[in-house]
Amino acid sequence: MTQRVQSGYDAKDITVLEGLDPVRRRPGMYIGSTGPRGLHHLLWEVVDNSVDEAMAGFCDRIEVTLLADGGVCVKDNGRGIPVAKHPKTKQSALTTVLTTLHAGGKFESGAYQVSGGLHGVGLSVVNALSERLDVEVVRDGFQWAQSFHLGTPTGPVKKIKPAKRTGTTTTFWPSEATFTETTTFTFQTVSSRLREMAFLNKGVTIALKDERGEDPVEQAFQYKGGLIDFVKHLGASKEPVHPHILYFEDVDEDGEVEVAMQWMKNSYTETVLSFANNINTHEGGTHEEGFRKALTRALNEFARDKGILKEKEDNLTGEDVREGLTAIVSVKVRQPQFEGQTKTKLGNTEVRGYVERTLNRVIPEWLERHPGEARSIAEKAITAARARMAARKARELTRRKSMLESASLPGKLADCSSRDAAESELFIVEGDSAAGPAKQGRDSRIQAILPIRGKIINVEKARLTKALQNAEIQALITAIGTGIGEDFDLTKARYHKVVMLTDADVDGAHIRTLLLTFFFRHMKPLIEAGYMYIAQPPLYRVKQGKKVTYLDGDAELAAFREENGNKRMDVSRFKGLGEMNPSELWETAMDPERRRLLRVDLEDATQAEEVFSALMGNDVSARKAFIQQNARDVRFLDV
Image (cartoon, rainbow, N blue to C red; front, side, top):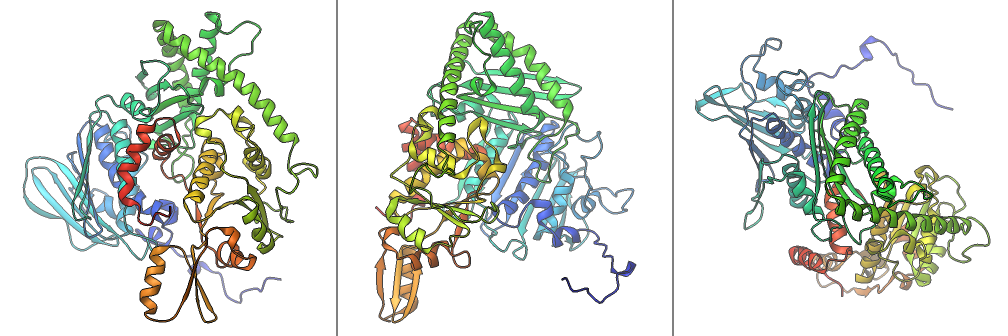
């Protein structure tokens, strides 16, 4: 029984957080987390302010600099944040925007027609979570400046000197007290996001400079083709079904819609990226629903009208139509309604109808103007429909062979006794040699073991029909329990932790990559829900008398030797998990109290798409280029 606390609960016990205190107390409510994702969210908020100026037609250049001392500088040539006295707060509008939640130019319709959400909120949040923030504004004929410490002004707005041009420069240093995991921005993450923003804002130049290394790295992104260039970029390593990229744009009182798309040969998955006011809505929303419905209808009508789809044949499904499709759907909405604090799903119901009506008009027109290319697209969709029917039969066979039935897959899955998915864990291990100690060392109440033999099929190069013929793929699908493709249901997941436990060598890394490709292409909601993990088994065991220490790699071993000087030690290297005894495997990789797991996150869908296509696709030159670009990042390669 709960002990009753012997204290009063009166009006004086109600805490009122003023100014930016709520942000510092509960930063996760405003930026999602205090890990790397939340850290980068600070930068996105500042950049989004500059992009909003570009969308309003007042800015055509944005510069982002990763400073050597850990700070970030964002400069634009927009109108500059107003500095005059605010009529309500009686202080400079610049100070108000940076120190007051829900203060900004995006709440009224005058300053901005559309913007990336309510970013007046964002700038004050960045300020609250920064050890220091300096802002310089050029407007009204002068340069103005103000500095802050943890959201509090260190002095008033200062008039510096006369200046002709306009713009805003914001420099901030994230607070180490808030971001305890890291305050280091990842160049690749920043670069990928800025390139995406340049694609979405045709003609705007976004420059990136990294001053943290010995030699500064500089990039500049500008795309006059906008979304057309975006589709070309995503499909660079693939062969298109048709030469011309479909491109449509429309503006009316409901907002703006812009769509570019192209189908790819030998590609069996869809890549549909949607954006609302430049925000990547990776959970989709009403704009994506309208796009899907209009596209499916248009292709069905064209195929029926031209006799490509026979009268006795069923209509093409959305899944058939979108097989091999690379598409970008971007909408601009005056009053966007995003579901969830992190703005990943658009909820405006009127947008669905607007996008659908627009595409119902323009897609059939394009198909009629390009009959040869349209026929190729329709024939690819019909081929996909036939493959889907074959895949459905294979799925039904897989379902009948469910591992949950006693007669199926004997000896494969060593299940756990718990039926509570929230506490249950599935460890995917390499073969029977690793399965042996894993089964003996596990906590059989909550931990299940599934051995897979060899390397599973590369699903990037194979249709789902072929993938479902692979015994290891069947085992994965039935063990996890969610189904796959159109049958996928996250609520049926039998484990809320699916852990890839492979050897700490090149073969183990290859198996993990093949598994990740399968999960990304066919079970992406598992990743988005945070159910996917990678175990970190050690590579070395160091024995000093009775004391045993486990080390992850060569770097840790070198550091350990340096720390222990001339002390005698017995170092042994694990060639594979099968060499560990059950207690060692439990201690180092399976014990919830001591193990280290990496959770697989989908921070940047665009970047993930590019990497999987390059590394696992058919284009050898794209893979070679990726290896050459990233070879310097490899420190300890175990071959």
